[in-house]
Image 1 (tube, rainbow, N blue to C red):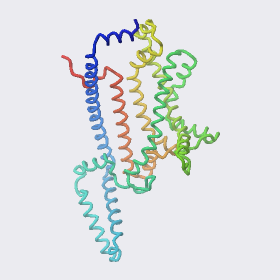
Image 2 (cartoon, helix red, strand yellow):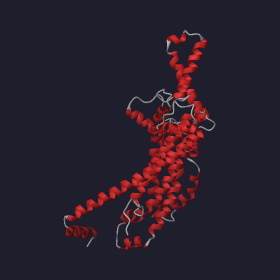
Image 3 (cartoon, helix red, strand yellow):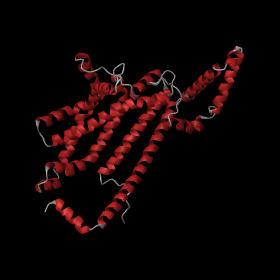
Image 4 (cartoon, rainbow, N blue to C red):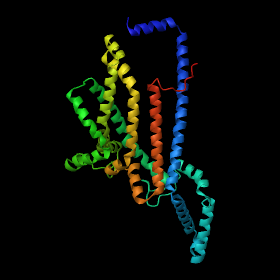
Length: 384
């Protein structure tokens, strides 16, 4: 009798009460996963807050943030006074006196006359909400100098680049490793092993060679940017231009990590494919696809997901140089420009956004890890 027939017979003998029992178990499992997700979210959130707090202390080394706040106040007071016609006709001495008085009042209102430690909670709230004032020499694509708008308008470009690249990298490495595990010792397997050390170079390193070959020499693809200038007027034209500009940076990202991931994950598959329960499944006559899904792929997913999470972390760190090389209008390129221009509020804001992206990545990986690995406790009751 087949396994499907046995399971159907068991369901028939169990009667209608089994359905309600399954629903109760499912609801309890979902509740445990929800509690686990809440605890992980709280833990990661605390880590992010501590990291942002340290960023504030470092950024204010020597009172730098205070000086930026004072400069912002002075600029705002000057703009407000210039809009008053009666102020313009006053003598220079009176205008200076009014200006200095209003600046002093505004600084006192914002608490700049108090010690920095007393004002730290306010700085922390402003940093968490990206309320970081204005940039001195930078504007967003819409022309605003607000740091929050500069960051939020450039964030989608970074996600458009790294989102598809990471998904392509994961599935390409996963299926490539499964394919090689069936062909252990073949020429292709040896070639991947030989290419694995090439992943030691970052993505921007390969990006330089890809630009040289496919943009400069062959002229098949654009040098950089997100879309052609001027942007195509139609949606389909814009989408095709975006895909064309994505080819080189996405290829650079994939090349920089795919070979080492295939080699590592292929090793996991080879180790688990030689276990006794896999040999027993083969002896039962199960299909190779079912054996790979149930007995090889599932137990190897936890270490694979963990290794991929580490790959994502390193990729976020390399976004600054990669986007600069390809002229991609994202947060990484803006970070490079902010460092060169000394735009501390923009640097702090982009650092916070990268912290949020990293925290979101770790949270999603934690939830997936808990779902695929039954050894991870997700709030189950202790057994006495």
